[in-house]
Length: 220
Image (tube, rainbow, N blue to C red; front, side):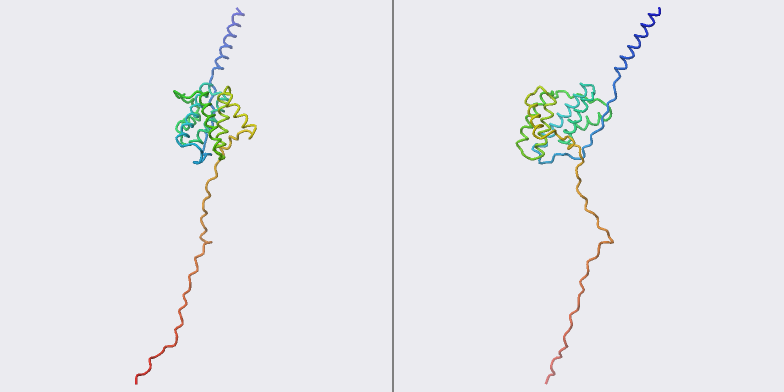
């Protein structure tokens, strides 16, 4: 009888342990706040293309979090994807919604017909190669970020891995903090102090001196 009770106790302890493992940990996400984009209008991408890439990056972030059940690794990768998406298009609908839902501890909906990580990796690699041909600093920065994301999304894509690693060897690791640093705001024109403002000196008009009055000669 004693052994039966011991077996029952062990069974319930094991069951409680399994239930504890099934408890979903709270999703911790500090919402991203991108005040201004790190990329100007001179970036070598049209506005419509920037919107499209931002949507695809946000969808990839949402899918990765849901599939990995909000693991620490998936949240870290999603943060990088969403940060870039919001810099490409700060008002992108999908990026804003996913960022807000994660901040509320909610798992976002997986978009239907979304690109797989492998397909998105190929797109990022190809677009990054085109950006390197436009030799401005922001185009090269975005190209480096595309290369790194492509390699992380599909480590079996040898071209993406090679491009990312060669870039790292040549230029060092990508500084992703550039996307979240506050942008310098235009300096406000200081309002002059009234006490320091002096009225302009008025020009003093000096009346001309009149010459002696000449009377007409007397008539004969």
